[in-house]
Length: 360
Ligand code: PMP
Image (cartoon, rainbow, N blue to C red; front, side):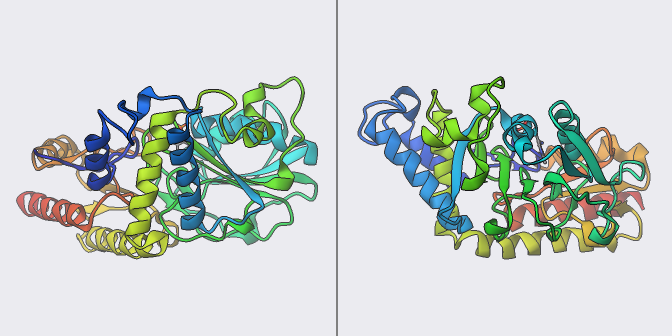
C-alpha cells in the first residue's frame, strides 16, 4: 500500500485509522450481515450509530442543550439560502462580512431572499486580511450577522467574534473541529463535511433552538430547520454512509484527546509551515497578513512562477498531492486539516527545501 500525503482542500484526507476501520466493516456491519450503506436508516443499528455520532460531536464541541445538531444534505452552499430563509423574520436586512470567495457566494445567494448589508469587503485587495471589527459598518436593524471565519481559498482566517446583539451565523466548513470554540456565542454554525468531518454529501448545522420555527410557507420544506430538527434529520433518507463515517471521525478525534489536543497539533503544523515559508528568503511567500493566516489552508507563491509546473510535478512524484493553488490565487496551497499528520508537513518541507536548493 502506498498512501500519499493529500493536501487537497476538499474532499480532503481522512484519518487512516478511520478508513481501515470502515474497510473492515464494509461487507458486514454491526451484526446486520450487510454494509452500512445497505440497511434502513430507520432500523435500530443505524439509528444508534446516528445518535452516537451526534452525541460525540456534542461532546467534542461542548454543544449546549439548547442547540439542535442537524445532519443534512446540500453542502454548505445550501445553507447560503437556508439561513436567510430561516432567519429573515428577524429583520429586513442582514449583515455580511465579505472576506473571501465563500463569503461572496453566501452574499450572492442571500440577496435573493433578504437585503444584504456588507459590513466589510476585502475583494479589491484580493482577500489578504480580515479588517478589525472597529471598521465594520454594522447596521442597527439586521436580522443576523454572517461570517466566514476561515476562507478556504485565500487562506484567510479570524478566530475572534464581533461583539453584536444579533445571532452570528458562521460558515465553519474549513475550520470546524480544528480548535475549541464557544458554541454558545453563535446562532448558527454550519459546515460541509468534506474537510474536517467526513465524506462529501453531509452538511452539519448547529442551530440555537429559538431560531427555529419561522420558516416561510412558500420555500422548500427541506430547508426548514424545524422540519429537520423534529425528524432528527430523517424527514427523508439521510446520507447514511457519510453520517456513519463522520461518526467514526468523531470517535477517532475523541480517542485522540478531542478538539483541545488536535488544536495543539494544528497550531504546531501551521507554525512550522509558515515559519519555513517566511524564512525562505522570498523563494516562497504567503500573501496573507500575519494576523489573518489560516491554520487549515496555507497558500504559498513561488517567486518565479515559471517553476510552478516543475514544483507540482516533483511534489506529486514525492507523494505530496493536490498542492496546486486555487486558480484565483495561483501558486500552491497546502490544506492541512486534522487528518494531516506532522509527518506530512515534514515531508512537504523537505521537498520545498530541496526544490529551493536546486533552483537558487
Ligand atoms: N464554504 C467554505 C468555507 C468552503 O470551503 C466551501 C467548499 N470548499 C463551501 C462553503 C462550499 O461547500 P459545499 O461544496 O459543501 O457546498
